[in-house]
Amino acid sequence: MRYNKIRKMDISNGPGVRVSIFMQGCAFKCYNCFNPETHDFNGGKEFTDETIDKIIDLASKDYIVGLSILGGEPMHPLNIEGTTKLAKRFKATYPNKTIWCWTGFLMDKDLMDKEVLKYIDVLVDGQYKDELHNFLLKYCGSSNQRIIDVAESLKANKVVLYDTEKIAV
Image (cartoon, rainbow, N blue to C red; front, side):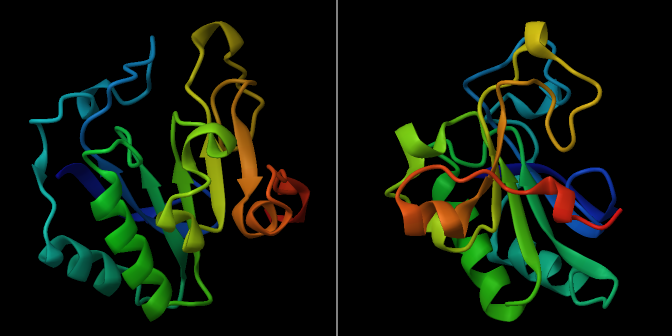
């Protein structure tokens, strides 16, 4: 597994100041993707335990409110094991910080049985669709994408949308 980049202070991918990691490799290759450099599974850098250690260290600052995991595609079969390992360690270290994750897969069709969901607070799912692009959307690029409250969805055994209005701006 590989990753493309780590941002140590990201304010555009989730609420507050966050650490973000962009996983490398995506089979969807959505038209006009904002991150086409992450599509090649052979690009980027090797994802190792040291990568996880670096993210844990970067997130130790009080002003960091959470971790954002993007791509590429963090839930692709080649990436999900590393994504799960990172999310599990992050939550064990920082139980009060949030994890947001973006995926082209659909939670209710593709991911409900995946361990990684136990550690993710908010999942933005669905492939980006250029014809549905909307600059006014919060935290997603096209209107088909959903912002999901993962814990509530797992309890209800169906998708429960996250209330973005409760996010302080």
